[in-house]
Image: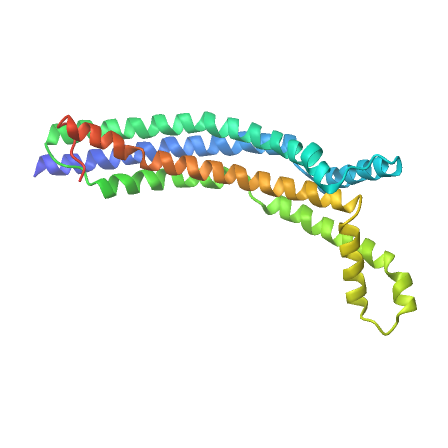
Length: 240
């Protein structure tokens, strides 16, 4: 009975150590990703600056089409953000994998010493719970959503100003409909179409960063299965 109680206690301590390690990694990852975000952050000012640059090239007769702007400006700019963020993520993932390996090694030692079998569902649950906080370290869409909302309001105000002649000539028509039609026309032309593409590129970039971490963590959370099977074949640790 004492052996069983001791084993359970050791497993609990191993789980606590795993959570402590992943919490520290999560905090470090959040700080590093925030630094990357600040370096590449798309603010309303930078978005409008991109539009002004597009407007200038348009006046000079060198405006890029929406597709060309996406391929040559927006997507490459957002890709730099993704590349730097993924590099940080992959660096910290190595630390996470090391923490999981240490955790599994502790379980192997405890199980071998007691001759008992570790519950695979419990092991899986502990690992999944330990890595879950890291998902909160990735850039949220909140800041970008605020930029998009402010940009959309500016677009709406610009559309309203451009719609004044039509509103005066067609007082019986719905003002909202006229402004919406004008807004759609603005979005099809420089510089607003370029601003829309830049905003979309960074929205996709943020989603790609979060998806990369989620998929990588999913692999880490399930990686113990192969290791457990290897140990089972060696008759060292049985997980069933």
